[in-house]
Structures are given as structure tokens and as C-alpha cells.
Length: 477
Ligand code: NAD
Image 1 (spheres, protein in one colour):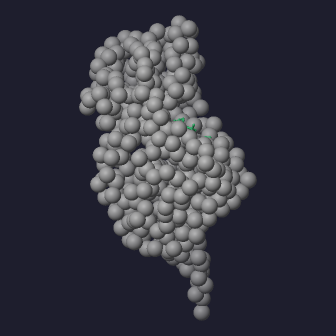
Image 2 (cartoon, rainbow, N blue to C red; image 1 turned 180 degrees about the horizontal axis):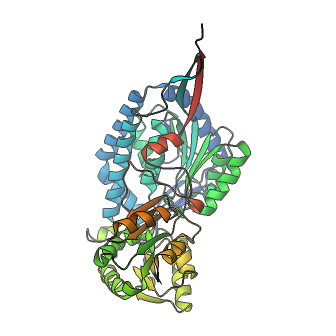
Image 3 (tube, rainbow, N blue to C red; image 1 turned 60 degrees about the vertical axis):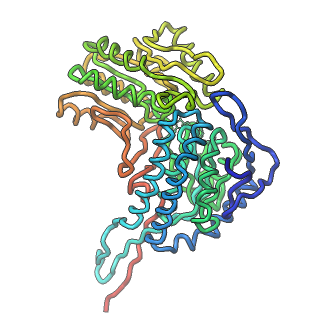
């Protein structure tokens, strides 16, 4: 377990409040640990530490910052098993998922260590007579970060690595449901970073998150979470006109044409719809399949989904689906399934909760839905995939885009011209062709429309966490 307290200015310190939050094991519904229920006063101290530390950190050369990021990656790798176990204990994730999270965390730090040294920019030049323009990329300053519970360590890494690479300091609030790996990470890297560069304040969104979003000493607020939380931080940020970076929800459409390789598509959705128990913003959870192949596709998908092993992480390496993260989220997902049943929607497999203890839901495929059905429209965020049918390409594209979200989408077809065309028309920040949910640290991740704005991963994240300055020299003589 991480030490008690808030990680501020290089060490764990007591919160300004004695109140604590329980951290619950979702497999057994027992209390694993307690963390401080942080306050606005904690945020005040953390922001002051981050402000003090930022100029020296931002003044290091990219090479110097890069070396520290590489040391952080190595430190995480040395504690791989510990972080895997802690993440699985707090979230109920199968070890396979936690291993992937830790491996991706390491890769994220290594990528940004390299990217920090290889930024490109407009060339210096005489764009006005006798005036030399030099474009400088500067850190923004102090970034406030708010992370979700579905990938606690990995989502923290997606923020921390580019923010530090670009020369900023930060104050991060992990989800109150899953703070353990973020606090442990802070402990593990404490001796590698100058005090105050990274600060972690635990607590709730409406208190600690809101204090960060509204704080005049914070230059940007970056949140990964739900649409409502995104709107709340954007509203709070408006008062101080700070920059906002939002990675919000998704409801990814998967368009399967009549010429698609149906077994391959079903196998892709087995992974993309159910990874992390479907608690995944990019999950391929809303299938639109051509009516002529719908029955055949559903048969393949049901076969795939029936082969999942559900259980707690410790039940064995073959476990692929764990519990949902918390009692409120479990009740929420169950509510979607109950209402779908009441509306006459058929579950081709699954469709209900599994016997407790623990927040387990059977991997589910709902079939025969209309596009306006609640389960087809709203982000369920559980192991539930819905299947609708369409008659022609225009209808498929129109319906795929008829959603408030725009994070990701996919198209399955063997026709190369159609795949280019349809990928261009789908309104999403990431579109896969004959695949879904494969990510690369080099490629940007982020949404359109209700899924937010700003990009994680890739050099685009470095752009987001820095600002350009034009310095112009008059050298006329
Ligand atoms: P959430 O919005 O409930 O919580 C996310 C974080 O926001 C938490 O730390 C929470 O404490 C904080 N928060 C809540 N209210 C706040 C407020 N008023 N001000 C500031 N902070 C506040 O989301 P969640 O349930 O933890 O995560 C699931 C959501 O996150 C889903 O909608 C999912 O799609 C989204 N998500 C998106 C991505 C992406 O990359 N786009 C990645 C992971 C998760």
C-alpha cells in the first residue's frame, strides 16, 4: 500500500482534514485501504509547491528531462508485479489487463522521453523584411489533472509523461474509487523528480477536482472522465480562462458490411467490446451490421462471448472478465439491462448480473435494437454489446454518426475503396478498419463532439501541454 497522506512537494504529508475515503475491493466488497478525503486547502498547498518547482523543471534541457522520464519508466518496470497486483486489487481487473496497463505505462514514459528531444516546429526565418522570427515552444506552467477509475495508473501516465516532458509541473487528483496505484507511483518515483514537480491530492471530484479547475494558479485543467465532469471543469475553468483538455466518454459504432470477414469481426469485438469488462471509453459496443449477414454475425459473436471466463483476478490466468469497479456502477449497468429486458430487447447471451459477492455482470450481447433504444444510445460502460441492422451504406454512416459522442469507430469490409470512404465519413477521433481498440503510443487519442477535445499520446499531446511564442528580431542595418 502507498503511504498515508497527500503527496505534496516531494513527500507524503497529512491532509488538512482528518476525513478519509474508503477504497473498496470490487470482488469481495471489503475495504482495502483509506485515503485522505482532500480539501481545497490541500489543493492550495499543492499548487503552491507546483508553482515553485516549475521554473527550474521547465528550465532543464529536453535531454535532462528525458533522462528522468526514462528512469521513471525503469522504476515502474522494476515494480511491475507490485503495480499489477495493486491495480487488480483495487479495480478487480484480470491480471492480463493490469499487465497491459503497466506495460503501456512504461511505454508511455519511454515514448515521451524520446519525443521531448525531437519536437519539430516552424523554421526560424525572415517572414517580414529585416525581421527574424523565432518560434519557441514553452511549458504552460502548472497543469491540474483529474483521472478516472477505469485505467487508474495508465490514464495518470498518459497525462504525467507529456506534461513533464513539455516542462510543466502538475497536481493530479486520481479517482476517489481507485487512488492506490497513482499514490504508489508517486512514492516509487519520489526520489527521481525534484520536489513539487509531481503532486497527488486524493479526494472527490466536486471538492478537489473543482478546486483544481477553478484555481487561478493552475494554467490548464486536463480531465479524463464522464461528459458531466467535463462540463463541470470547463465551466469552472472559464472563470480564470485557463486551457481545458477533455477526454470524455464514448459509444463506439462498429459498422460491419456484408462483405466483411465475419468470424474475424466477431473475434475483434470479443476483445474490443469486453476488454476491462467493457469499462473502456473506446469499447466497440454498438454494432451496426448489414441485415443480410446479421444472423450469421450474431452467431459468431455469441460463440465468442460464450467462451469468456469470468472471475476475480486471483482465480487464474485464464480469467478475462472481472467485476465492475463499484456498487454504484454495478447498479447502473444492471439498470440498463433490466430496462432493455422490460422494453422487449433480447439478450442473445448474458443479460443479467451474476451471483455475488462482487460486482459481476455476465458478458452480454443485446440483439434486435432500434437506434433510438436507450442501450444503443447511451454509454453503458460494462460488458454489453448491442447489435442493430442496416440496409445500405448511407444509412449505416448516418446512424453511426447519430450520437452525441465522437471518440472512436470502426468499419469492417474487404472492399478497400469502401473502407477509405466510410472511414472518412465517420465522425470520430480514431477510426479502425477491420480492427478495433488497437492503440499505439505514437498515434493521437482523443475525441470529437461530446467526447471532448485535446489529444493524449503522440507528439500532439506535447503540443497540447505547451504554448508557442513568437520572438522577432529586427536585424535591419
Ligand atoms: P467521472 O467523470 O465520474 O470521474 C472522473 C474524474 O472526474 C474522477 O476523478 C472524479 O472525481 C472527477 N470529477 C467528478 N466530478 C468532478 C467535478 N465536478 N470537477 C472536477 N472533477 C470531477 O468518470 P469515471 O466514472 O471515473 O470514468 C468513466 C468515464 O470516463 C467514462 O465516461 C469514460 O468513457 C471516460 N473515459 C474516457 C477516456 C478517454 O480517453 N476519452 C478514458 C477513460 C475513461
